[in-house]
Structure formats: structure tokens, C-alpha cells
Length: 249
Image (cartoon, rainbow, N blue to C red; front, side, top):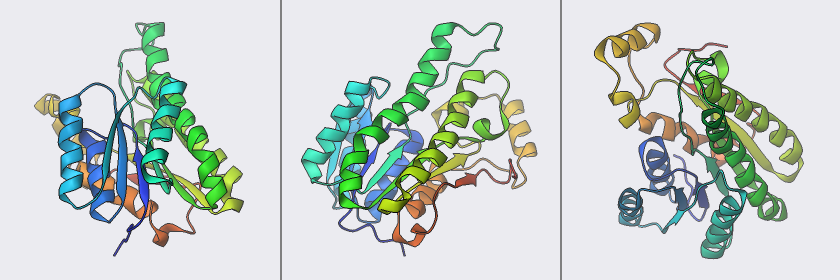
């Protein structure tokens, strides 16, 4: 059984969807969790209460990680609350879908700034305390879109592919200090976002997925919890697909 007792975790974009499931999975395994959220204070308060109901400490911190100062402030707040950073999960992400010929420059920049640059900013801020402690787990939430591309998501696919490169580069830089860096690449997961897809589109997704169904946020969270654990101590620089077999590499 995964045991994260005594560990402190940071999760970006942790108030809803996959992020919330990750926060709760880490807390369920014994970690105290700080998470960032961008705007929905009610959802953040609800997630924090759920963590505390599990007997763990929670810190909900409002921050837009596309701002390097805000990302650094989030890490500093968590370090101030818990005194250490054992686990960092970069989950914060947005979509601004459109075909390349119609995609605005702002839509491109917003997605790259949040999904890719935001992860860089939080890793950079968390790096010094992890290096000093000579331990740590960094998990980046990528996507099958970053592995195979997806029409109408040039910005999102580019950011998620960039996260894979960032994961591998960081893994090489920090391995000698006992820090691992891995990524998970979810497939299509049932969240508020995908629930709005039409039934024909949902049927097409199921047909394209060898396991024949959508994933759940909890299934993504379980993979993250594993990579955050001592059981994954000899795994670094890897991309774990949690996609029902959609992308096989």
C-alpha cells in the first residue's frame, strides 16, 4: 500500500476535476496538501474541507501559475506552512481550442503560458528546497494530445508535448540528488469539460479507445500517487500513459 505519511505535497490547479482527485488521493495516502486555484473559491474551500475530513492539513492558495511571481508565491506559502516540499504535481491547465488558421495569438500564448511555462515556474521555485533535502518527486500532467497531437488543439498539444521534454530534462538534471521527475499522460477522462461533448463524439472516443470507455479522475490520481511514492523510487524521466490504450508507444 502506498504510504505518504509525513510528506507534504503541492498540486497546481487542485480545486476541481483531475486536480481535485489528485489532491484527495495524496491526502488519502497520508500527505498534507497545498493546492493552487485560479478563481473558484467555493470549489477550493470544498476541496480543502475534504482533505481535512481525511485528517490531513490543507492549504488552498489562489494563484495563476502563468505568472512567475504567483507561482513562486504559491511554493513559498506551502513551504511556510509545511516546512518542506516532498511532492510537486503540475496539473494546472486550460484549453483555448481552434484550428491553427483561426487560432488567435492570445489563445496560443494563454495555453502555453499556463500549461507549460507555469509548470516550469513552479518546478524552478520548488527546486532549491528539494535539492537541499536531497529528495523529491515531481509529476507533470501531460496528455495523449502531447503524444499524438489533436486537431484543433495546436496550442494544447504543443504545451503538453513540451511538458514531456521538460520532464525528461529535469529528470536528468536532478537525479543525482535523489529527485525523480515523471509525467502522466491521461486520455479522455470524464470531467466537467468532457461531459459537455455530444453523444456521437463521446461514442467516437469510446470506439477509438481499446478499453472502450472514458477514464475517471481517480484513475489518473492513482497513477500520480504511485509516482509520488517510495515504490516509484527507481522510475524517472518516464511518461506513464493512463489512457485505456489510446496511444501505444
